[in-house]
Each structure stands twice: as structure tokens, then as C-alpha cells.
Length: 81
Image 1: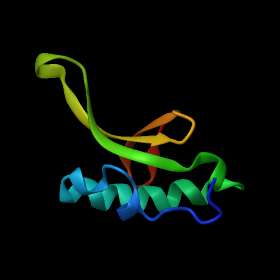
Image 2: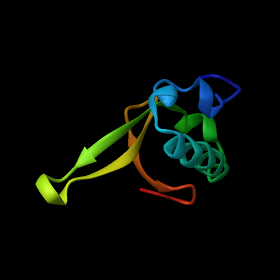
Image 3: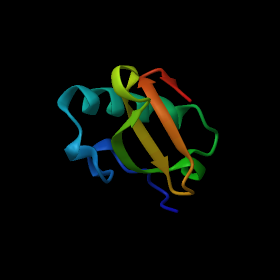
Image 4: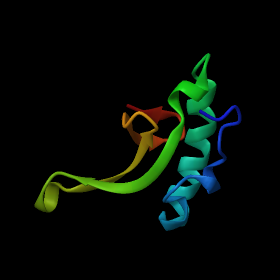
């Protein structure tokens, strides 16, 4: 793992996100890494827009994937699960 965590713009898939999603992801990333004592253990390596549900119940969200393939559903700069 890197000693220095990547900035949002350097993470795979960032440039494919819509502008509003880029803003949300950039804020999320800062808050996400600040939430951990050892943030390098949770390094985000990929981001994308993902879909869940079907038909009129389908929604899109930002999916942030860690180096260990764990991923997070990003709802806002302060909310993820």
C-alpha cells in the first residue's frame, strides 16, 4: 500500500463520473479517510456509478471500491455504508 493516499482525481473511474458525483466523491473521500486511524488500510482504488433496483424502483449511486474489494455505497459527502 502507498504511504500517501491518492487524491480523488487520481482514482480509477473518477473522470467518468458526472460533475455533481465528482464533487460528492471528493468530499466523501476526505471524510472517509479521516474516519480511520489507519486510512491506508481502506484505500479507495476505483469509483463508479452503480444501479440498484428494477424498473421505476431503480436508483443510481456512487460505488467506491477499496483495494481489498470491499465497497461502499456513497450517499453524500458525510454518508456512506
